[in-house]
Amino acid sequence: MTTLPLALTDRSGAPFDVRLFAPGDRAALQAMYQDFEPKRAAQGLPPADAAAIARWLDRILAEGTHLVVEVAGAVLGHAMLLPMSAERAELANFLHQSIRYRGIGTRLNRIILSLARDAGLSRVWLCVEPGNRPAVRSYERAGFRMTPGQMWAPEVEMEAVLEDPPPA
Ligand SMILES: CC(C)(COP(=O)(O)OP(=O)(O)OC[C@H]1O[C@@H](n2cnc3c(N)ncnc32)[C@H](O)[C@@H]1OP(=O)(O)O)[C@@H](O)C(=O)NCCC(=O)NCCS
Image 1 (cartoon, rainbow, N blue to C red):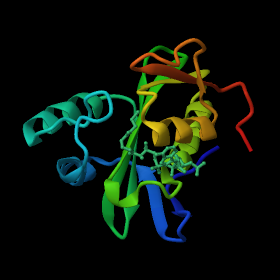
Image 2 (cartoon, helix red, strand yellow):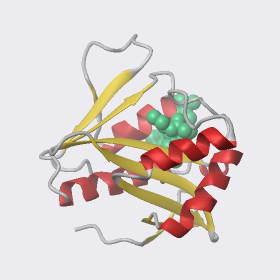
Image 3 (cartoon, rainbow, N blue to C red):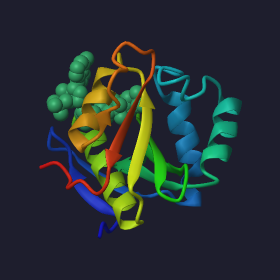
């Protein structure tokens, strides 16, 4: 079982916390996405302006499991697991530019997969642009595999099969 919150350390040795989103985090999440760069770089997300971000958050926060990454009291990351069916859910995650490439995204993916396993899901699916190398790499390291034959598509699907043991 995965128990949140988790107090962790990134690759540079800096501490960060991962916990479940609470309604009181909504304003901090809105602020993070307003400051997020580049906007609309991952399948058009996050949206470009404050009103569109608010509408998007209304929609996605209404369902699924949402985690936030907190660094020194500031919300700087968001991972979401959105239900697709009784067995399958979609993953997406967004880290503020100030905390990328330190292993936090890979760690977050692994936590989300553990939570999905605990919830009895059998697959976690996602869609990513293959040119987004850090994203693809962080998903692969957490156990996602690309569906064969998509290498040159503008967006590719990746899936983690949860019966498989987690990668070492
Ligand atoms: C995608 C994202 C969540 C990944 O989280 P992260 O903490 O930055 O990623 P990690 O540090 O865990 O892993 C990134 C990996 O890519 C590698 N990487 C970084 N830049 C790279 C590049 N230009 N080319 C290839 N690999 C690269 C890193 O070395 C690391 O691999 P390693 O662990 O084997 O060294 C984060 O970068 C992000 O929020 N990006 C913007 C939004 C986004 O694209 N979201 C994904 C939507 S599908």
